[in-house]
Image 1 (cartoon, rainbow, N blue to C red):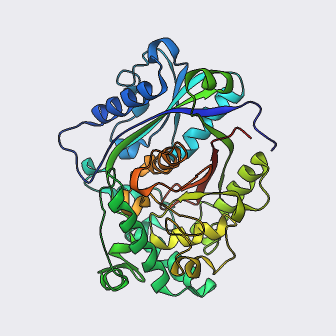
Image 2: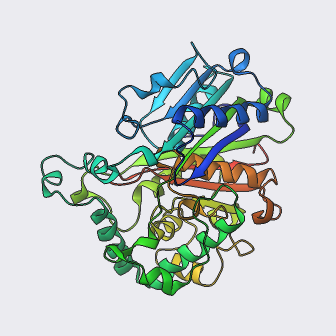
Image 3: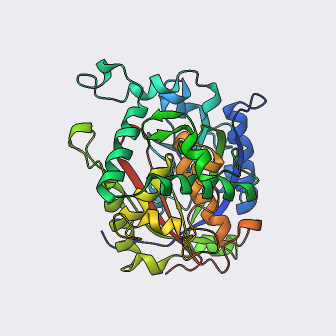
Length: 389
């Protein structure tokens, strides 16, 4: 897979939320608010300029069959093309990039949202994604998968559990400087380790809490991007991959799905030394150990090094390579399918110099990585830059 066939840039961003509960807003109102901000940021009118929408939604989470049919009106795009991805928002970004790179569109909006507070039985819905013959009949909470994987990761890499706790401390503290974050906090390693167990060795504070919110991005072809803004954020590479759907035959320690996705993105962007290529990283941390596992899968450090790297402060804002200056899912809240776009949103703001007190100085290139979530083994990676190449 070679370089992108044409230049594609993010020219506008908008968001609504993020909050643990939003009884005053429906999911349509969240979408309208985020879309209006994104279109204003990009300087476009959706009915005049937009060629289509790509949305990441899951009917089970929406509680509505064919939920994408509820998209066009509040996005200002009636009778526009709508492409729905039943996956993470970063996969939707990839679909939007391909539409523009293939010449099928000039300007595309990418949207995903979460109204997690409306879902009364999220664990039971997640369980429906398990194998119906061998796993679902066990009637266990789906968090058992995270507990088993965390145990395997810790043992295989010899990572101390205290280093996992430091991820929580770092990200929740980073969230204190992020006005979008739903769960900022000053915590200690002891607080994290002492919180109640969810699926041993995973504790409550090591798992991101669900949140409501919406993110909308506006993508444009290179020449149009330059005419719309003097601060486009260029998408230099993007890739995604899926490991085995079966729990019995997947990689339980190395996040093989993200390693393959990163290889594709790096090849497109011409990156051979990831450790030296990026100024910041926004990576999925739905569970704290996932941040460490994902950093290693991305080739930023060797297996077993991410925990020590974190403990030494290298992943702090101001460290060697800031990781999740936004606070990640642990600090902002887990936005279901929109979690990947939340990582992209922070990267865009950082590259535009608009991240406020958490700004990474002189940020030029960012790495974004997402995970589809339990019980999947699907991930995506995007490389964003202030320069097109």
